[in-house]
Length: 109
Image 1 (cartoon, helix red, strand yellow):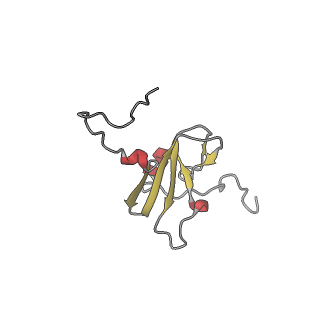
Image 2 (image 1 turned 135 degrees about the vertical axis):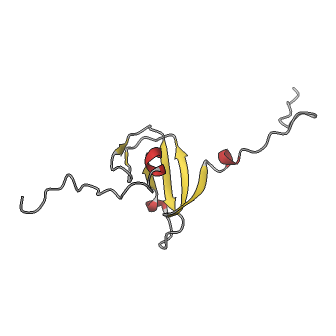
C-alpha cells in the first residue's frame, strides 16, 4: 500500500508559520509598570485569585497568565499570576488591591 506524502503539493501556496501558535500564545508586553510575559490560557481545573480585582478566576474560565521579565529577583514559576484578561489590561488604571483587607477585623473593634 502506497503512503501518501505529507509534503505540500507542487504548485500549492505556501502557508506562513503562525508565530503566535508556535510560541504557545506567549507575547512580551512593555508597559509603564515594566515588561511582562503574557500568555492567554483557556482555563484549567483549578480556581485562581486575580491580583487585579481580588476576585476568583473560576476553573475552566479563559484568562491571562502573566509574569514580569524585568524583576530583579528573576521571574520563576512562583512569580506567575493568573489574571482576568480585562483586569490585566486595566492594571495601569487601577490601584493595587488590598487582598483580604475588607475581610479582616480592625483592632479595637
